[in-house]
Image (tube, rainbow, N blue to C red; front, side, top):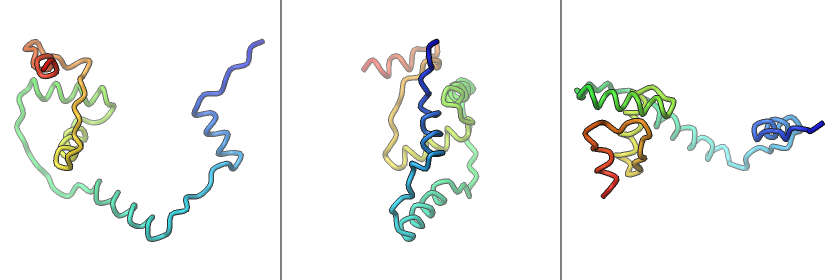
Length: 108
């Protein structure tokens, strides 16, 4: 009989149960700074309304489904990455409209 190799998640769970994880050596001040930064990043205190073409919205919704997030969250994430200079475009498997825009953009 062949034994199955534990998955990555199973190995992590096993290590956790055996007490192999140790607390971070960050100071309370550093932890507070990280906590404050995380809160500031995810606070959504402003509402914005925009108009999009139906095909663009469909493409956004498709891409959001690929990523496993709500489409409004995807839009907010893209805008955040753009304004912080971290936007990196990834070619989508599903959103190649008949006009070939995505293909032309990535062929250059």
